[in-house]
Structure formats: structure tokens, C-alpha cells
Image 1 (cartoon, rainbow, N blue to C red):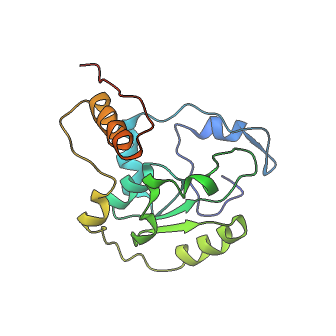
Image 2 (cartoon, rainbow, N blue to C red):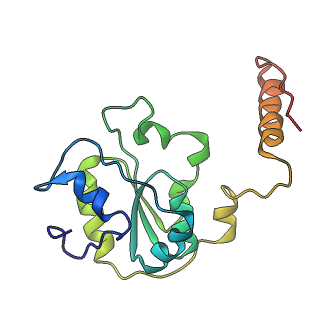
Length: 167
């Protein structure tokens, strides 16, 4: 925190964050206790810009009219790194939401951040149609929705077994 101007680390994760860093170099993986869900609205309400991986926090930040810089490049470690996951069907259309800036190359992260941080925030919420692609309202339990989805794929492809949702 002392080395990063204009950055405030959430006090509830500060100790874990500091333990993961020493002298500006990351020492191993950063592991801290997640914040309770009740903390996120206040964080998003007070954020000017959200930098995050491919995550639901993107949608939540957009709902709060926050710009989002999403890390979506290969990490060189995982088979399904963000550089792969960005091409998954459930991220289709993410480029069309004006609040989302998708960083697909590690070398672009700092310049993109600098550009976004120095540009006035228009403070607009994405149109409902853009968000409805990801936000789904259905009264059925998740297991029933998943089974119906897989049955649809099976019927189309003819290669999957029939699934029965547990009531």
C-alpha cells in the first residue's frame, strides 16, 4: 500500500495482503480470507475503477456504474487461464459492454489502466439488454436448469446421456 499511490487496500484483507508481498515482489501466492458478501456493495460503491479477473464482480461493478478492467490473458500456468476462458460461451458478448475493458495481453495491462484511470468516468450503467445475457431469472433449482441445458445439448448433438434433476 505504501508503494502504490492512490491505492487503498480493504482493511479487512490488509494483513493477508501484506503477508503475501515483501519489498514489492510477490512471495508465493496471495492467500487471504475472502470478504463476506455483505462487504462488496460498499467496496463497489466507493471504487472508481475495478480491476479483476473474469468473474461475477464484473457484472456487479457494472451494476454500480463502475468501469471494469478485466484481466483476460494467458497466465502461462493453467490450462484454463483467463486467455482461454475468455473464449468460453458464457463470456460471449463481454466485449460489447461499454464498461468492460478486456485486457488480452499482459503488456497491455499498465497502459490500459493508465488510460482508463486518466479518462473521466461517464458513470453510466450498461443497458439491461447487455446484462440480461448473463443475468438469468428462473424459478427452477439450479440442478433442474443444468439438467435441461445438458438435455438440450444431447438432443442437438446426440452424444450425451440423459440426466435427471434431483427434486
